[in-house]
Image: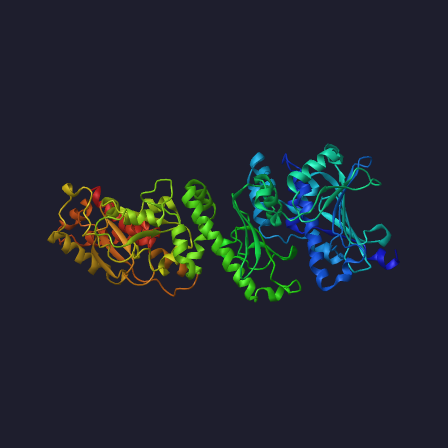
Length: 629
C-alpha cells in the first residue's frame, strides 16, 4: 500500500437515519435473527444480476469466471461467517453511498414505526420490513466488507462495529476477491450457531432457495464448496412443480418482506409478445406504499437476465404488487433509458395490468373474504385508478368496495348498491370526509336514513377526486348528499305513517325569509330542507362546482382562490326552528342572534369553526343570559 493510499484511509460517521437503524439492529429483541442471511444473500444475488446485465455490453467484465455464484464460508474457530459473491462489486464511492446512507424508500417510515411500537410489536416489524445490509449487526459485533468492482484494478475495505461510524480504506488486490464482494461477519457469542452448516443450509432453503444465482457452502475456509441451491429461475418452472411454500419463499426474497402473499399470479403470455409473469399481492402494506414518488417494485428481466427494477411495468395504482416480468422479445442490449419508450414494454404493461385486474375479479367472486382483506390493505391505492385510468374505470368501479350506511363493518360493491336502489331513486349518493365515524354522524344523512337510502361513506383522500369526474355506474350518476337539493320528496319515508306534514307553515317560511335577510352576503341562500329530520340546520354546496369537502381540500392546497358561499338549509319541522318562528317580530335582536348561532352551529357540524369566535361567544352569552331570565 502506498503512502497516498494510507492517507486516503478515513473514518466517517453514519448518516443520521443509518445510525438510528443500526441502533435498532444492535438492540433488537427480534427473535428470528435468521433474516440477516436472507438480506445479505438477496443483495449478493442483485450484484450478480447487475453484472450479468452489464456484461451484455461489456463481456470482458466476466473475464475467465463467467459462472455467477454466491458462497457461504464458515470459520467456526474464529467465530466468523463469510458471505461472498462474484457479482458487479463496489468501488470506494459505491461503498460510501450504499453502506453509509439509506437510499431505500420507506426506511424512514419504518424507523418511525419501530420507535413508536414497544416490545414484541416493534420487533416484529423488523422481520416484516427487511432491513438489508444493516441486519448483519443483529448477529455480529463487527462487519468487514471487501469489494472490487468488475473491470477495475482497485479494491476497498469497509469496516464498522455498528456504533456510529465506519472506516473506508484501500485494500491489497491479493487479499480481495478478483471481482465482487466479500462480507465478513465477526459473530456475537450468542450467534455462533451461524457457523453450523445445518443451520445455514436450513435458512437458505427456507428463505433464499429460489434466488436466481447458485449458492454454495464451505464447512471451513479450505474445504470444497457444496451447492445447496441451484439458482434455477422459479418463474421458468412449470406451475405444477412449484409448491405454495416455494412461492412464499420467492415472494419474501423478491419483495424484501416477511408476510404471506395474499394473491399469486403466475403465467406465461404467448402470441404477439412472449413473456412470463410472477407477481404477488402482499398481505401487509409495504412501508413505502404512500411514498410521494409512487414507484412500483416490479423487476424486468429479458431472457432471465435482470435489466432493471425501475421500468414502469404497472400503473401506479398497482404499485403494491411485487414480482417480475421476464420478456423473450425485448433486446438484451436495450438501455434502461430507452425501455420506457419501447412499444413492446407498453404492450406488456397493458397485458399484465389487465391480467391482474381480471384475477382480482375472479378472487372477488370466488372468495369474497380473501378479496376483502386485499381491499382493506390496498383499496385506497386501487381507487387512484378510478381517477387516473379512464380506460379501465368501469372495471375498477366493479372492483371497488365501500363502507356505506348499510354495510356495518363490512364492504359493499356498487353492484350491491344498485341492486338495493329504492323506488324512484335515480342516483348513487355519497358523502366525503376525513373520518368515517364523523361521516356516519353527519346531519346530511338524516333524510336518506329516514328513507332507507344507502349512502357511500368515502373517507380516502382520493375519493374527492374520482367521484367528481366519474360518469356514474350502470347509468346511475354519483351525487353528493352535501351538494345541491336533495330531491328526496319522490321517495317515501320508512315511517310514512308518522311523517309530519311536508308543507312548511307560514310562520316557518317567514322565519326562513328573515334568516336569509339577516345573513345577507354570508350565505348564497337560506332554504327549507328535506334532507334533515333530527338536526336543525346544515350547510350544503351549490348544484354546480365542488362539494364542501373537495372545496376545502382545493383551498388548503392553494388551488382555489376563494370558497363559494354555502347554502344554509333549515329543518322546518325541528322544534327549535318552530319555536323561533313563533317569536314576536318585535324581538328582532334575539332572533338575529339565534339566526347567526344557527349558521355557526351548521359550520361546526360541517367540521369548520365559527367565522368570528368573538361574535359567536358574545351572541351565545346574550342568548344564555336571556334564557336564565
